[in-house]
Length: 175
Image 1 (spheres, rainbow, N blue to C red):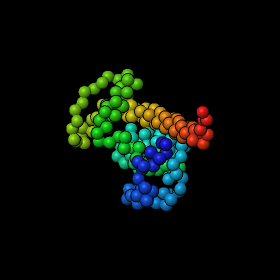
Image 2 (spheres, rainbow, N blue to C red; image 1 turned 60 degrees about the vertical axis):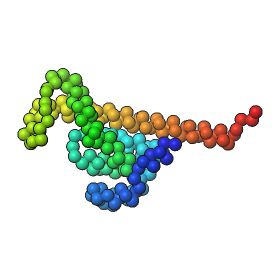
Image 3 (cartoon, one colour; image 1 turned 90 degrees about the vertical axis):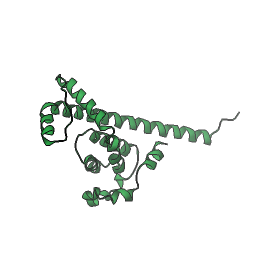
Image 4 (tube, rainbow, N blue to C red; image 1 turned 90 degrees about the horizontal axis):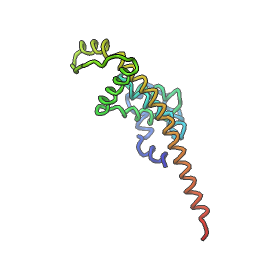
């Protein structure tokens, strides 16, 4: 069942509550709804995590936690889902967002090379920044919506399959 699979992947409540980064939220973390795993909380948490994984900002996990708390969705799942964008997946994700931004804006694609300097960051924000940020925003909304409805559908499918198996065990066909 999908619920059991997700629970195996998530860290324990105590580990998350004791995490030094999430200590910022204090007693808000004691709400039991943040730790409960059902179809609504899992779908919402997945959508929150996917939404913030496309944002090109540091502290994506804090942002996901900050939105998961008022929405009362599963906190560990929303924080963990942010890691879809990790150091290995960020370059293709952000390049794809940049290409999408170019298509939407109708802007020409600009050549750029990475430099580790503040001057490069400021020049990039002026040249490729608008297309990149629009692409990131569009990807955030699109993939979080797909993630919400996709996980919701998979959850329903999983529950339906479990019910059918339970009925087969309870009422076996007599031959």
